[in-house]
Amino acid sequence: MPEVAADPQGEVAKTFQNLGICVVQQCAKIRQQVSTAVTYDKSIKAIRVKVPDSDEEFLLHPATVRRNDRSAQSVDEWTGEQKLQYTDVPEDIEPEDIRPMGNYAVSITWPDGFSQIAPYDQLQMIERLVDVPKPTRTQA
Image (cartoon, rainbow, N blue to C red; front, top):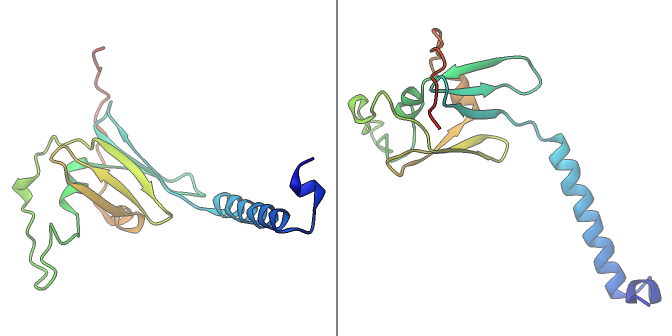
């Protein structure tokens, strides 16, 4: 007979009960999370941002996103001087990976090895693509 069933008031039973409570709480948090979906659409070479709880979706040029990095590697923390120059980022740069970072940002990995943290509110402020490029055919 399992120890939990043999001694429902014992330490092992209490440990499993606390574990169950934590699992339920974490599941509730996950269900309540509002996350913005950010993906790279290779066919049009654009970053696609879907705003939660709405039909709003917009596109961003990858180079524009990379140039808008606000980290210490791109902007001097003391002077505010822009260290990353416009010409440092090639126009045709494409993200290698985009992953959510909690409820506030995505982590974007670029081909030069840089990992950019892009908060959702910052993405919503960046200049959007108006003229959507035509999809390109990818060769298998």
